[in-house]
Length: 167
Image 1 (cartoon, rainbow, N blue to C red):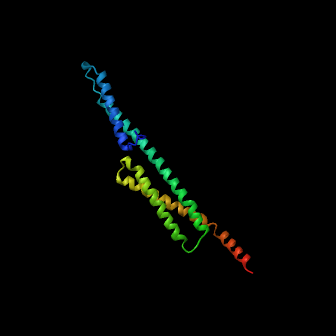
Image 2: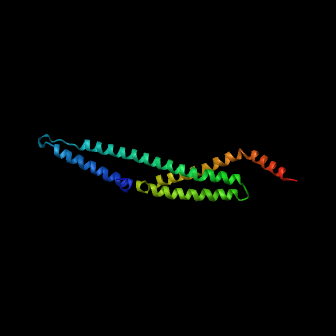
Image 3: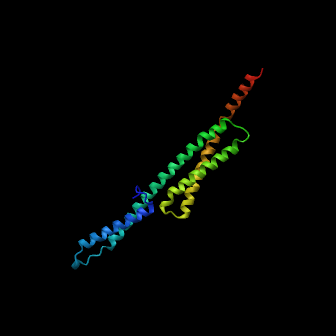
């Protein structure tokens, strides 16, 4: 159903209804009137098992999506931030903030669209979006710390270049 474009929550609902209907039909076919057999406990267990499996699949899919968007953010931020530090100027931090904001907004928008079919509650969606924002910020912070460790080397290189060009 997912491959046909049906949303995740809708697919789960349709699949659950289908399984429960099949169970009811199977029970009706197997029922013996004189036995007075009650399948309600078995039906409840089946329903709990289906829900548990659906939740497990949902968690796996959401985790997969989160990893994918974290990877996308890592790629869209790491190299450009490094390049901005390599060619540092007066507006480096402003450029980095602008890049972070733009790439984060793109990822958040795409991620929101991707998870919209999961039928998640608002607080869960907000937490996931905040986690993605935090990840993007951490990518930039990690890159900044990495580049800060190289500052002495850069200063020496620039000094050597300046001394080399002085007549």
